[in-house]
Image 1: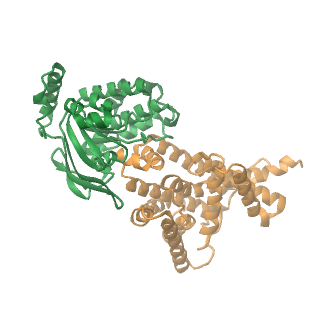
Image 2: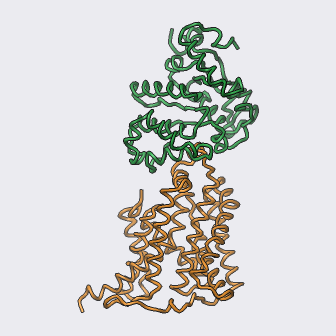
Image 3: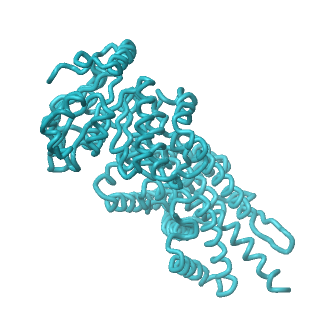
Length: 288
Length: 266
């Protein structure tokens, strides 16, 4: 077999996996771009999305994707409350305060997961999650393809939302010039809370597809936060296209790393790439 | 204060203006549109305004003149709600607005064009204008106001799909002014509109200001250029170190010895 045919599997897997990473990173990127907060509880909130779907599946018996009807509004509400009642107050004092609060939320969530779902590994095991898909010589899990399709849908939706609606334009305006946004009649506290809420609704989506793709435990939030940070930093802060490209680049680096250096080294390769990109273009691929 | 300028001036253009004002006053039952009474304001522990009072009648163009740091921008900021006064009151159409937030004040009909323009650099020109009509009162009039702004500044229509940061300084100021008009204001607050612009552009902006007033919008502007202010406005307030030191109609102020000495070197 030629090298290219050999490489086709890591290429396709990397791109598809990149879709999942982009969805996971999207909320982080949105909050960073607009509110300028680094939400280090992001990974744990994504895992909350996974656990909500897990609960819906085990208790009510509905499909994880369908359970987003519950999960998205629930996380939207939680996100709105976190920004409105905690972070909006904190960032008027200092940005460090928001970091500490997010860290606190992260610890609280991890402990709740341990108490409720035990430290055992869980997965959103559905019949289709185990299916695989063939494309010529390449075989990959169906969930990887779903991840990628969902990534595209979510990105297009957010892109159109930010361009076409009053709230979307207001979110971008508040991100660019807070004082002027006030003078336009924009209640920036409200806009920040809604931005965080929207980011969390996307985290619910990310959580479900993460759970369909990988098993998760109460402490899975942290590794995925770190992946999301890598993706956001790679793609450039606060850019949707950048997040998508960053996700893909990260996914590819991981699968290529696995292919050439073994699975144990794949994350090392991915992060080395993040560092290299930053050394050459510090603002990220699509950074302003 | 001296008698109001309306009764004191007999020149033709003044009488013409007066008829305009009466026309606008019919829509506006209150004699005074904006009444700032004895306000003190602080930036942290620094007192920026000391016992400042000011009033604006419907249809007027009023200037606030003063050197850098005299408190004129702070005065505009307290009216728009960006800074809350520590003492005193600000009434707009007879309603106390001194404790309201900027986004609430905008929907009452006060629009501030901030110093340094404050445009949104990575939004397009038309998005900048659309966001000007964010408050609910202005949304229903969005199409109408957008058309008016494009009439006033045709160059903005030509450049509507461009990002705002790609505009020239003068165009950015037009955008800021147009965006301020999109909120459908009764009172327009302008902060250092002519700062850093070529004289020809400044002339053009002041011509547009007159047109805006013709449409029934009252204007309160802050300006460092004294000569300019005393020609373009009906009345002016002169500020020094956070206090109003002189006020009156511009014809009187131009003749005032202190003003002549301080600003015209005569």
